[in-house]
Amino acid sequence: RAAVQAMIDAQTDFRGDIGFFTPGAYSIATTALTFNVANARYLGPPVRNPRRSTVTITDAIGDWSVEADNQEFGFLRFVPLTAQNTFTNTTGSDGVYFHDYWWDATGVATSTSTEFWRSVSAASDYLFERGIHQVDAAQGDAFTLVGAHRWVWRDCDFLVVGPTITQATWITFATTISASCVADTCRFFGAGGANALITNCVTGMTGAGIFKAQYCTVDGTAMPTAGNFETGFDATVGIELIENYLTGDATTEGGVLIKLT
Image 1 (cartoon, rainbow, N blue to C red):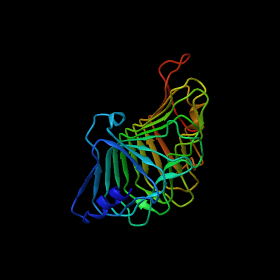
Image 2 (spheres, rainbow, N blue to C red):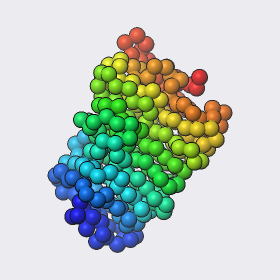
Image 3 (cartoon, rainbow, N blue to C red):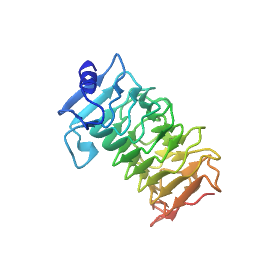
């Protein structure tokens, strides 16, 4: 932890410095990391798929804090600590970009408090691309968000592995107003048979602005009904569904268009 924090502290705001992680396994304990350099970049060696990342960063403390604008994280595998949030953010941390990353909770003890990202302050213009969020025990949401404005998930996987797991939800918009968030070409699926379930992919609340899901798919065996794609939104103004499909399974080939019940 001390070495990684020293690397962060040696950077300069707005210069676009790169904190490069050489291949290996890093464990962060004792004190949470503070990412507080604007326009800084934190990268591992480039890989074509997040599962091939040669850098593993294990969270042994929780609540790494993102506290500056326009930071980038890529080509990294994150292993969470049970009952802890891997990342949180503070006011003044807009424009953050994650890409080609893997949040791998495989083997982590079950807890509904295990989350990839739990925001504590409003933040705008976040982008998550080519990310994998994977659990093999019922964990908390990958994202619980307060005041999320213009957050986008693009080409991301949300994966439940195991035959007897029910993941309650993956993305939750908490009670502060959120606006214009998008899930684009994402996949929500189970890889453990008919009992690897997702209760709801997304949870919102009435009057939350607009959440739009477009061109997403949900594994046919991972959800009880297509109408369970979301819950909690004001169906008239809170959510838009554009060409999302519940995929085919052993009895229904070709997929079914997801629509609000």
